[in-house]
Length: 547
Image (cartoon, rainbow, N blue to C red; front, side, top):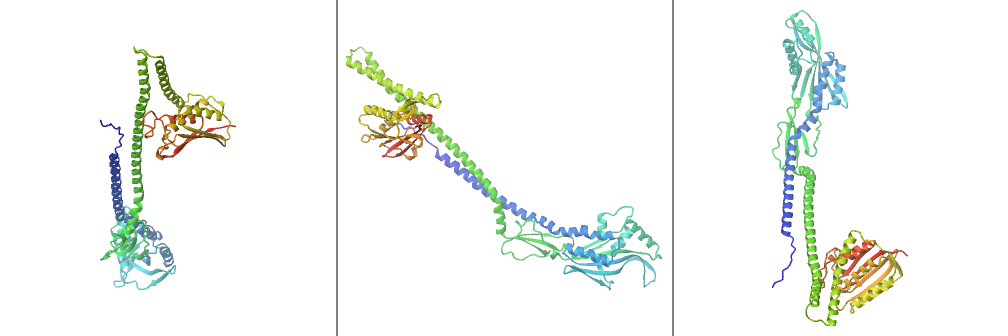
């Protein structure tokens, strides 16, 4: 009949499927997150240009909204000197203003040289040109003021405003912009804003053409150069190169495959645009930079899942090992009990039988009963002592022992028990030792018993060395047995652990060495093992020693 094998299996295919699944999810997550990140950067490349435009055009807006309206505060009383000072402040703060023209004008009933009659209108008294040079403002008066289209355009707007504006209310911003501003590509013309009282006065002058009164009015034209605007790249991570180009600029070829976008300037710069260009490698650098924390987070999640899987696997492995230990313990313990019980039952049956027994047979059965009862008692005492040690319910009863006599006593006992067992001992520098002789004796008994049990029939040898090292006493048990594999050295002191070999198939429940370790720990010592397969093992017990 085929022998049934107990197999403790681990489903490695399930583990592999789990690792493959989370690895695939990890790769897909990296791929998707990278593509989404790349798409996000490309969208930012197309949208963040507005931020650059706002920062670049900000000085122009400041000039248009705040600096130019300062002319109104002079209420028409600017002269060449104050106009030059104003122009100097403009040139210093707004480098894109390359030239300014100042019109010192007058409004009123002026005499017409052709008809000889007075008529309402606006004329130039004097005109000055200003421009920056070497950090200073340069000025030049222009005498020929007949053909000035910018002035004529603004003069017509003022006349129209005086004629048609509603003086019962304040003018709206739209009315002010249409009447006192003239924005054209490359230049802005401006006249100081009239008050309602001024408009009423001018209308009264128109109704009385014979009046020769007139009032001063200031106008200025600002000539702007868009190439002098300072481009402020607020997103250097997105835009590699930003230039100011004409609106009609459109390169015919883009051999490098650069990503480009553009946005038109406003106001006097409306015929120009900001042209953005970035090489693919430049944007890839930004994409990778932004992807690194995302990738690290995905990797962290992946490692976390792997860790959880490993912890689950380890927990299952521990449970399987515990199940195996318990299963083996029950089998071995049952066998340990079954054999003495069977022998006791047989001997008892013979004693209680009807057949006559000789005195010799009766004594033999009695001896068998005593020996088997001792085995059962020893096994029960070991389990009971182990439980008491774990629960710390045993008290150490120290007494002074002679070390050499103590060792020699156990050696003599085992020589009688195992005549083929060659045991030697050496004691160096140790005479008396305070300890619990029962607990220490249990350690000796288990280690000597193991040395005999796990040795080849021809090499049943054991050497016991006792030495004093610093403040400790060291007991060394060196045999020439079968040895222990390196991967099992850390497990031999575990409860119910049994090394699978030909000497350990029956008659062991895996408590001997675990019991020794508990005893040594209870006595505040330590036990270690050194071993080589087929060469032997050495168990070293170290206990506190006071001279």
